[in-house]
Image (cartoon, rainbow, N blue to C red; front, side):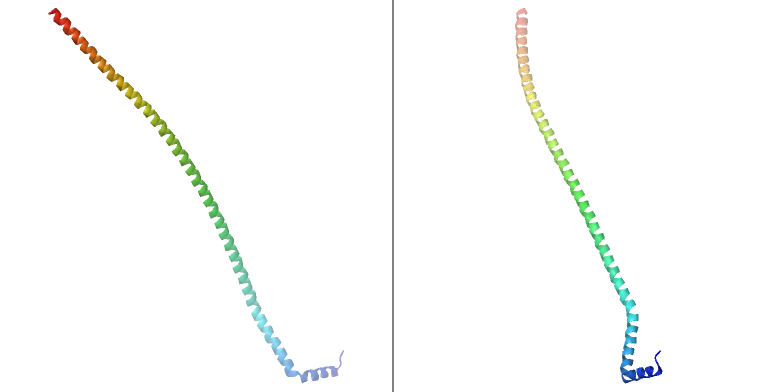
Length: 146
Protein backbone atom coordinates (compact mmCIF):
# COMPACT_ATOMS: atom_id res chain seq x y z
CA UNK A 1 0.00 0.00 0.00
CA UNK A 2 1.44 3.33 -0.92
CA UNK A 3 2.51 5.58 1.86
CA UNK A 4 1.38 9.07 2.65
CA UNK A 5 4.31 10.47 0.77
CA UNK A 6 3.06 9.02 -2.46
CA UNK A 7 -0.19 10.88 -2.14
CA UNK A 8 1.65 14.05 -1.30
CA UNK A 9 3.86 13.70 -4.39
CA UNK A 10 0.83 12.98 -6.52
CA UNK A 11 -0.95 16.05 -5.21
CA UNK A 12 2.19 18.16 -5.73
CA UNK A 13 2.52 16.84 -9.30
CA UNK A 14 -1.11 17.60 -10.02
CA UNK A 15 -0.85 20.90 -8.22
CA UNK A 16 1.56 22.27 -10.77
CA UNK A 17 -0.87 21.62 -13.59
CA UNK A 18 -3.95 21.98 -11.39
CA UNK A 19 -5.84 24.60 -13.39
CA UNK A 20 -5.18 22.63 -16.58
CA UNK A 21 -6.49 19.46 -14.95
CA UNK A 22 -9.54 21.32 -13.75
CA UNK A 23 -10.13 22.67 -17.22
CA UNK A 24 -9.74 19.18 -18.71
CA UNK A 25 -12.05 17.71 -16.07
CA UNK A 26 -14.57 20.50 -16.69
CA UNK A 27 -14.40 19.92 -20.44
CA UNK A 28 -14.91 16.19 -19.92
CA UNK A 29 -17.90 16.89 -17.70
CA UNK A 30 -19.39 19.36 -20.19
CA UNK A 31 -18.78 17.02 -23.15
CA UNK A 32 -20.30 14.14 -21.17
CA UNK A 33 -23.31 16.26 -20.23
CA UNK A 34 -23.80 17.40 -23.83
CA UNK A 35 -23.30 13.85 -25.11
CA UNK A 36 -25.84 12.50 -22.62
CA UNK A 37 -28.37 15.15 -23.68
CA UNK A 38 -27.51 15.01 -27.38
CA UNK A 39 -27.44 11.20 -27.90
CA UNK A 40 -31.19 10.65 -27.42
CA UNK A 41 -31.85 13.45 -29.88
CA UNK A 42 -29.48 11.83 -32.38
CA UNK A 43 -31.11 8.43 -31.81
CA UNK A 44 -34.57 9.87 -32.33
CA UNK A 45 -33.39 11.70 -35.43
CA UNK A 46 -31.92 8.49 -36.83
CA UNK A 47 -35.10 6.57 -35.96
CA UNK A 48 -37.10 9.29 -37.68
CA UNK A 49 -34.89 9.08 -40.76
CA UNK A 50 -35.25 5.30 -40.77
CA UNK A 51 -39.04 5.59 -40.44
CA UNK A 52 -39.13 8.16 -43.23
CA UNK A 53 -37.04 5.86 -45.45
CA UNK A 54 -39.30 2.91 -44.60
CA UNK A 55 -42.41 4.94 -45.37
CA UNK A 56 -40.82 6.13 -48.60
CA UNK A 57 -39.93 2.57 -49.59
CA UNK A 58 -43.44 1.41 -48.69
CA UNK A 59 -44.94 4.26 -50.73
CA UNK A 60 -42.69 3.39 -53.69
CA UNK A 61 -43.68 -0.28 -53.38
CA UNK A 62 -47.37 0.71 -53.25
CA UNK A 63 -46.92 2.94 -56.29
CA UNK A 64 -45.16 0.13 -58.16
CA UNK A 65 -47.95 -2.29 -57.20
CA UNK A 66 -50.61 0.19 -58.32
CA UNK A 67 -48.70 0.83 -61.57
CA UNK A 68 -48.54 -2.95 -62.18
CA UNK A 69 -52.27 -3.28 -61.50
CA UNK A 70 -53.00 -0.36 -63.83
CA UNK A 71 -50.83 -1.91 -66.56
CA UNK A 72 -52.57 -5.28 -66.13
CA UNK A 73 -55.97 -3.56 -66.31
CA UNK A 74 -54.89 -1.65 -69.41
CA UNK A 75 -53.64 -4.85 -71.04
CA UNK A 76 -56.90 -6.63 -70.16
CA UNK A 77 -58.96 -3.75 -71.54
CA UNK A 78 -56.86 -3.65 -74.71
CA UNK A 79 -57.36 -7.41 -75.19
CA UNK A 80 -61.11 -7.02 -74.66
CA UNK A 81 -61.22 -4.13 -77.12
CA UNK A 82 -59.29 -6.12 -79.73
CA UNK A 83 -61.62 -9.08 -79.21
CA UNK A 84 -64.67 -6.85 -79.58
CA UNK A 85 -63.22 -5.28 -82.71
CA UNK A 86 -62.53 -8.74 -84.17
CA UNK A 87 -66.09 -9.85 -83.39
CA UNK A 88 -67.45 -6.65 -84.92
CA UNK A 89 -65.34 -7.21 -88.03
CA UNK A 90 -66.57 -10.82 -88.31
CA UNK A 91 -70.13 -9.62 -87.82
CA UNK A 92 -69.70 -6.96 -90.51
CA UNK A 93 -68.28 -9.56 -92.88
CA UNK A 94 -71.18 -11.92 -92.14
CA UNK A 95 -73.69 -9.11 -92.76
CA UNK A 96 -71.93 -8.20 -96.02
CA UNK A 97 -72.10 -11.84 -97.13
CA UNK A 98 -75.77 -12.03 -96.19
CA UNK A 99 -76.51 -8.78 -98.04
CA UNK A 100 -74.65 -10.06 -101.11
CA UNK A 101 -76.68 -13.29 -101.00
CA UNK A 102 -79.94 -11.35 -100.62
CA UNK A 103 -78.93 -9.03 -103.45
CA UNK A 104 -78.17 -12.01 -105.71
CA UNK A 105 -81.50 -13.64 -104.83
CA UNK A 106 -83.26 -10.34 -105.48
CA UNK A 107 -81.65 -10.09 -108.92
CA UNK A 108 -82.72 -13.67 -109.72
CA UNK A 109 -86.21 -12.87 -108.46
CA UNK A 110 -86.35 -9.70 -110.55
CA UNK A 111 -85.24 -11.66 -113.63
CA UNK A 112 -87.93 -14.29 -112.98
CA UNK A 113 -90.53 -11.62 -112.38
CA UNK A 114 -89.54 -9.95 -115.62
CA UNK A 115 -89.81 -13.27 -117.44
CA UNK A 116 -93.20 -13.99 -115.84
CA UNK A 117 -94.38 -10.48 -116.74
CA UNK A 118 -93.35 -11.11 -120.36
CA UNK A 119 -95.21 -14.45 -120.35
CA UNK A 120 -98.28 -12.78 -118.85
CA UNK A 121 -98.11 -10.13 -121.59
CA UNK A 122 -97.75 -12.88 -124.23
CA UNK A 123 -100.68 -14.78 -122.73
CA UNK A 124 -102.67 -11.56 -122.55
CA UNK A 125 -101.93 -10.82 -126.21
CA UNK A 126 -102.72 -14.42 -127.18
CA UNK A 127 -105.99 -14.27 -125.23
CA UNK A 128 -106.79 -10.98 -126.88
CA UNK A 129 -106.11 -12.59 -130.28
CA UNK A 130 -108.20 -15.64 -129.37
CA UNK A 131 -110.97 -13.40 -128.08
CA UNK A 132 -110.85 -11.44 -131.34
CA UNK A 133 -110.99 -14.66 -133.31
CA UNK A 134 -113.88 -15.90 -131.15
CA UNK A 135 -115.65 -12.58 -131.80
CA UNK A 136 -114.94 -12.92 -135.50
CA UNK A 137 -116.19 -16.49 -135.55
CA UNK A 138 -119.18 -15.52 -133.49
CA UNK A 139 -119.95 -12.60 -135.73
CA UNK A 140 -119.57 -14.72 -138.84
CA UNK A 141 -121.69 -17.55 -137.55
CA UNK A 142 -124.35 -15.34 -136.03
CA UNK A 143 -124.60 -13.24 -139.19
CA UNK A 144 -124.94 -16.29 -141.34
CA UNK A 145 -127.72 -17.52 -139.22
CA UNK A 146 -129.53 -14.29 -139.40
